[in-house]
Structure formats: C-alpha cells, structure tokens
Image (tube, rainbow, N blue to C red; front, top):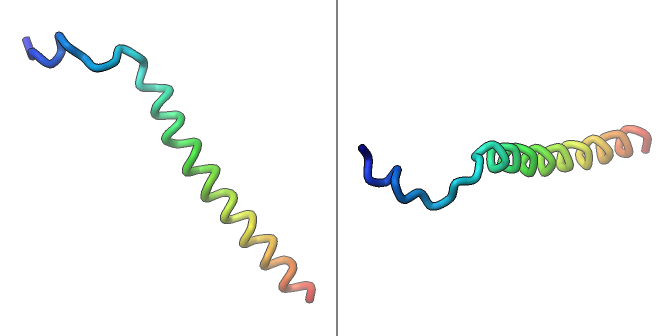
Length: 46
C-alpha cells in the first residue's frame, strides 16, 4: 500500500475546490467581457 494514502492532508471532498476553481475565473472573465461589451455599445452610439 502507498504510505502517502495513510497520512492524507485533508479528507474533504475535492468537488468544492473544483467548483471554486471554475466559478471565480469564469466570473472574472465574464466581468471583463461585459465591461468590454458596454464600452463597445457606448462607442457605437456616439
């Protein structure tokens, strides 16, 4: 048996870390996209 499996650092589920790692970058890039779209729309009207 692998000795590292006997002494794990955390027993928490990795799913929450995966969701967090997906959501925050998604929100950041979505915010950048929305801001760029607003600038584009304002620029087309002026």
